[in-house]
Length: 382
Image 1 (cartoon, rainbow, N blue to C red):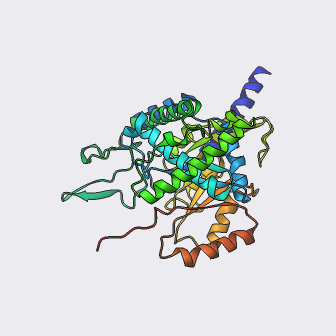
Image 2 (tube, rainbow, N blue to C red):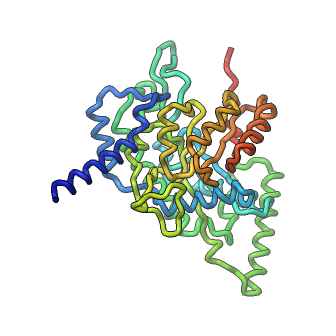
Image 3 (cartoon, helix red, strand yellow):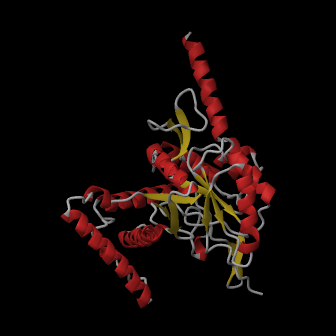
């Protein structure tokens, strides 16, 4: 009996591993070539043993908020570095990014009269997709910079080093730990919005407009306090979620855990053990425009996690392909699961966005529509 029970458990564990690693059977874009596989295995084993960076409760809370955004009840604000560097893991840069998101969300709340969901490209945006595996610097061909998670920006540090995978984990965890501490200590307190500073804004007219908004909010808060309606506890902190592109799948797999669903959460695909696969490296991850192939490893991986996900939609995305992609990653049409991040480029957005919106509406999928105003604006040298 004991032997049979052991075999049954071993078989079940094997099935779980097969499901989690299914992406490895698919073709991969932006593949990483490591010279020392033993060092890679050691790094991934270490990552698999480390605690989660984020929790299922936080992940599902974000998904619930994104449902509101998809239904037009909230506004999504996401921002941060194109490629985060390990050196950005310091108090001053992190404080500046927190304050900037607070300032932007304050203006959006004031103008739209809707809640704002704040997501930072922070605490994990260490991988960078590249059009070519190599580049020419000073007449010499060198490997392209793939982000601090894989190699260094300095041309002499371009060799892929597996130990950087573990370093990425600790920089992510440290950054998020500091963010949580600052938010818990009142950095987001709406009673002191002028403490967020405006040193990065050089336009005096914009500074004046922002100061007027802050003054109006401060007057309202003073009135609420005077009449005994100051809900101070609700105004001292905010939710600020983390995100990054899920590019290096071996890293993401190592931080993907089968964990118990939070109380009250209704998964789109219930399991007999009340658990689901959560990527615990970030609250929100997205598939890049270069890795969204329907038969590719990235789509295969993303369709299996509970996290809300983003999909970059560029000018090469065909309308029928977009619908099939949505059916693949979100077959149960869970509202709040998918955010479509458009990055067409200024010269193509008018001709492409409307058609994509219409085909998604016709498909029955309800998604969050988000604009990426930075990427896709490439001017190539002749």
